[in-house]
Image 1 (cartoon, rainbow, N blue to C red):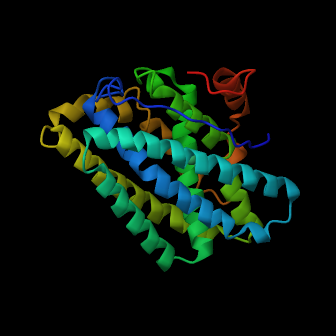
Image 2: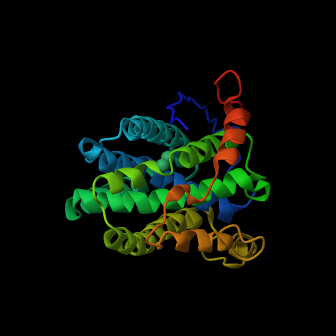
Length: 272
Ligand SMILES: [Fe+2]
Ligand SMILES: [Fe+2]
């Protein structure tokens, strides 16, 4: 499978995208908005981590994948920045939150060695691959997302699935070992969930639901218990800790092929 950078230019009209664009639910929408606010700087972090190890990759195929990976992540960052401008029209503190995430990631880059930054990237790419597979495979998860916003998330999910093994393969090519990969997955999980929860809480406060936990009950049950979109990812998450884990252990090729055709079809253009 070749990893291709696709030119995408989406338009988000603040006048027509509903405030609660995800299932009409304030909790779920602010959850997704919080993810979007983390993406541009997070993806820049991934790109830098991979770039720093490019010289250690001997395989021409993997080098080609690295080029595709960098192109895809840069494009995701660009389109999520555009989407985050829409978020900022509804949540004026969004740019400030993004700035804090940027400062935090700069700090992480200062503290961690390049190899550990790459291990963190592998961990977060496992998260994005799991979420992507959920979006691509489960109509109930993506159903209810406003049609003006849906192409952004489905295109991003498609490409996260396409390139899910690149950072991992670079890590291995660079001699990255199991202990660092597993330990940094554990640490990254805690920090990622905490950072996301903080951003989410700020957005929920602005939306007026932070102090109304009964507004979260139904989405929490939906996400974690029934149908449990996140709850059912736990085995896939734990699989990462197996010493012989590889992202391609989960064969998502048929799913990716189907969505590539569905989104980009014969014309190579993202179809709404
Ligand atoms: Fe991405
Ligand atoms: Fe990615």
